[in-house]
Image 1: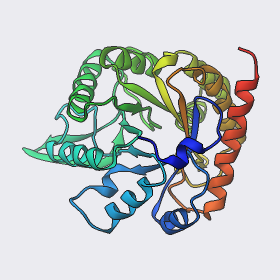
Image 2: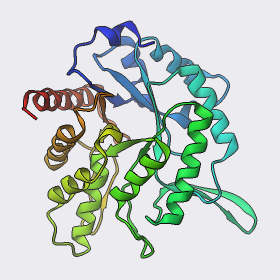
Image 3: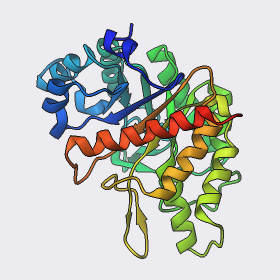
Amino acid sequence: MAPERFAQMAHPAGMSTGIGWRHPHYAQVLESKPALDFLEVHSENFFGQGGAALAVLQQARQTYPISLHGVGLALGSVAGVDPWHLDQLSQLVERIDPVRVSDHASFARGQVNGLNLHAADLLPIAFHRRSLDVLCANVQQVQDRLKRVLLVENLSAYVSFNSSDMDEATFLGELASRTGCGLLVDVNNIYVNALNARLAGSTADPVRACMDWLDQLPSRAVAEVHVAGHKDCGDIVIDDHGSLVCDPVWEIYRHALARFGGSPEGLASLVEWDTDIPPLQVLLDEAARARVFQTHAQEVPA
């Protein structure tokens, strides 16, 4: 059941807005209780049977719905999902009863010289049938264990595979169709990829390319959208989540709202900020800007 504060909060019908809740803002959010529809945290930061971190999360859950966003399931790994990791996530889901659970279309686990290793990174996967089979099997295993729909996020990727035989949007659409999972669309990730494609020689307009990418996705599968900042290093653009959302990403976000915002299941929007974390008010202002775009999207005739 949603907390009473959530039920009373005014926001565009069918849409919700939250921020990534990071350690520097734990105390201030708990004390000031800003008007947010949900908080999103990294699942792995709250694994374990107890401790201060879990107590803080349980306290926040008394006021806000919580979205659990994972970075370690490594859903695209041929080695499969780590049983310990899935056990910990399952226990956390039971304790928190999150509004959503998500992770990435990436791999990280594998065997080297007979040892099981985890790369501790979100490594890209090839978009072909064999990797799709692996990803589908692992996503289904997680959903069966958690007894709920998992959202799977697209990556910002700095390499690609010659063996890919379909584009990323088609690949993710197939994943959603085969497993019934939802999709978490990170708008900043697709823009970073488009900018890096331009650095590699693409002549496509990055914003238009991102909108075309969004248009290929099955609209009913998309349940959440992320926006964030990135860093242009000259010869590469890095998805560092360390700055304000730029105007082109907001433009693509508005297109995402028009494309996915009419779903009867609703659409959540999240402002991510993970490095060089600013004062809380900066994140709240970004969330407020997202809410303005949501309201405008609902005022525009379909």
